[in-house]
Length: 505
Image 1 (cartoon, rainbow, N blue to C red):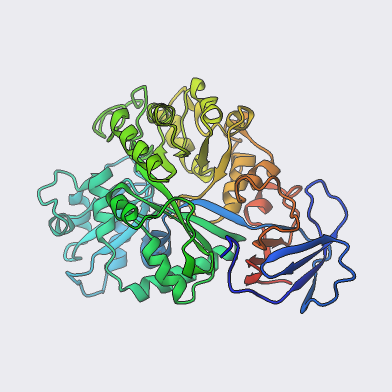
Image 2 (image 1 turned 60 degrees about the vertical axis):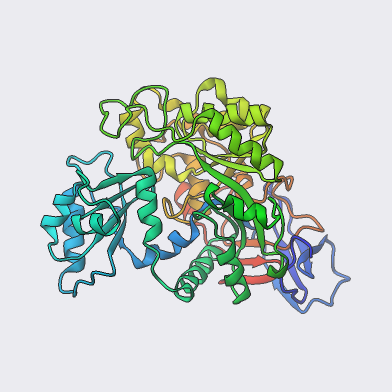
């Protein structure tokens, strides 16, 4: 079965579609059997079952999000949002209000998400939660970056951390608790994922790389078999399930046959450091003014030798590698491991880079898989903890100029699964009235959109033979203002020739 195959649809003729960012005249596009059958003069082909007049609207390749924790993103709407809280005491008050009047259930934790404590005037502590909401049962609050979790005393007992000094868990301890929170039945979670997929399609998304831990492919197999046709999915695997994948003789790029070409085996995902908000991203220099997160330069769970062994095994078994690296030291080590092993793949985040390492991405053919909305979420934290060095943070212009390939994602739920937020952040580097943050690193709309489209497709313009994964826009993305770019209205989205979203056409 071909990579683009889905349930085949009848043919559709798009009239007067704009295809070229340069603003050339509108053309007709015929979609048949899940592909672009013809572009240009298709007047003689009048057998299309449906004719859609776009009246000069843009018809472009559909958008991808290359870094999503999809199940966690799907569950966000069921959890308490504490992302706007400016202090620990405010989060505790939000939890207290949330649980007021409800009967505590010792088997079901109260779960919140989204706190960012790096700039808080007070520290997260179990006693703060205990005092604000006694009798609430276990309370688990997930950090916005997914690298920390704040628990009350009862939750600490529940998840094996009784006696923890503060209740603020970091890195592996936090991730283990986050993973243990999944207590909904498969059919419930799958319904959440279907709703989240439809919401993504409404923003023009046709595909994701799902890096949910430890391996999401079996769950996606089930969801697609049950009728979820919202997105293409490339499913990454973490080291703890890598033996299972190898035993099944799977390899990066393999298409799972019974999923209509919708599900593909992804890379091996490996963590090499922490995150900025948790102050665990591994850096060459100490975090300014703090050493409260353990090592004052961050954490490095794997040495370059250990990382290289994993990557050699991945290469030998037909897997690409997706290496999480945020701090400049972690990125240097990840690039060193790519050079040692000859492995293929990406560095996920590439958030803070030494000048000398910018050019190594292109030299080693390593993709910089970045999340531009993070630069707006993290700018104040970076200005504080990476003081004097932020010109090297989120260096998109420098990477492109050095010949690197950029791909965009959201890291949802760290940022919303909405490619227009990423595109606008990379182009304008602000989302409000504040000055643009390091505008020398801005890129063009065309470059940002290309980073949000299928890799190696050779441009933004559709061609005959392309898979009919398409988006129709209600505004011109190449000329609109920053606010309009962030809120780009999507008229319709198509996956393999089938509508996954249809609003205004």
